[in-house]
Image (cartoon, rainbow, N blue to C red):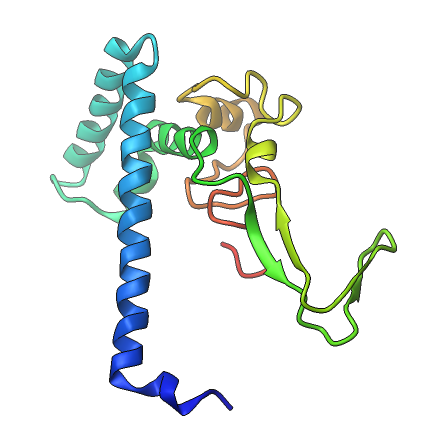
Length: 175
């Protein structure tokens, strides 16, 4: 049973403020990184108008309204945001988990990990791996758009996680 003090208005307010601060801070940082990445990209003089045209075209189709359907049609903008999040990620590690099972766990390779151990994924290393992302240290705004076109597969949106894209973590609860 949780501690009853955790259900007090003061404690709940504190938790809500903490989550709100984290959300505002990460969105602000991601937006700042995106602007830096877009405007430091050598042919930004043509990139910015191309992204603007895509947004204006979709808005025109949707009567000037921002909709989820419209956002899903902004595939080049989505790719640029996803690429910025890959290249300019917030941290070096992600998907932090603590072993909670009494007696620990044994991984598929036979390694035993004791209870209380913290495990993480090397997010920065994966996002900058040349085998996963050729020219990994370069901002290539349409990388994800081009990958989807080349594979003729369903495009993965900015919020789609995978073992290779960990900006939002990954696991059984990921979208």
